[in-house]
Amino acid sequence: MVRSLFKKLNNYILIILSIFILDRISKYYVIALNNQMLENDTLYSTNFLNIHLIWNSGVAFGLFSFKEDFYYNFITMIIVVVIILIGNLIRKSKKLDGYFYSMIVGGAIGNLFDRIVYNAVPDFIDLHYNSFHWFIFNVADIFITFGIICLIYFDVFRNKKND
Image (cartoon, rainbow, N blue to C red; front, top):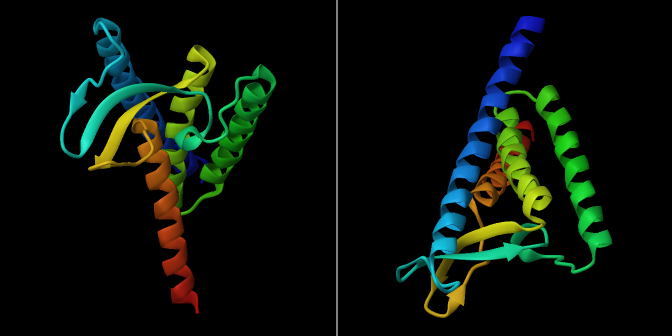
């Protein structure tokens, strides 16, 4: 029993660390490229994708950006509490849910690291079509969003089976 729990948690920890490392590498690469450029310009551009570094002091997609340290620190503490709560859900989870929670925690830890080190999160993936631009995001945001969408999707279909 204890051995299987330990093995299960190791799989989740591996997912969390892999996402964190992938996120760190992508952000390090984009920040380094941006620092080499003479202007803060777009690093890469196509008809649908720009790689353009911005610093986000808010939460997801730049929401709730504050200039005041109190609010920034308060939001950071809320993020820490949410990570701890989701970590507890990972421990108690069954089947696929633990993997989806691990994706969320891996991305959240990646963004939390940036909030602590840089006082902002580097976002750089800009999807667009003509003049419509989606929110600029990063690799950690992809995993957070994917984990949440999967949890919702599987919860809806599990509930339909039980009806």
